[in-house]
Length: 132
Image 1 (tube, rainbow, N blue to C red):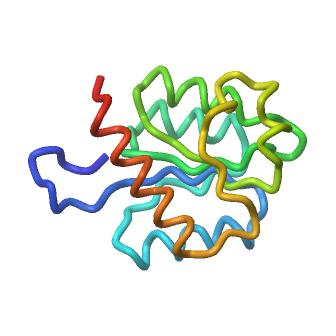
Image 2 (image 1 turned 120 degrees about the vertical axis):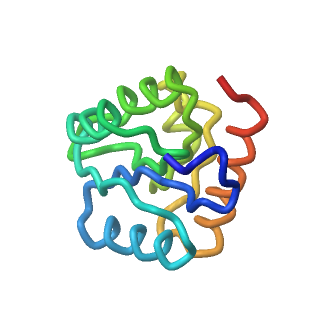
């Protein structure tokens, strides 16, 4: 997690994405814009293990990881007060069955750099508005 006493510290973003090419692309987008990247995690279990060891400032999640919903990760993030957003090909109506994902911003795939960075800024702003 970034140093809260240093507002200029690079924000740390957890990337949860099971497609290797997309995961690397996300990593490059965020690192190129000054973020520290945690992951990428390609599975729910890997993401939860990372969250047991470190606390990112925010996270970007794919909704489906090799057929498994990302909801356990979203629930963990919510319980820790870590803001997150989705980058998924799913429509909003397909996500509403998972309460923890129902109102979360989804930057639809294929996502452009500017859309991803804007969503990350909004997530960080939400996290600052509602601290633990």
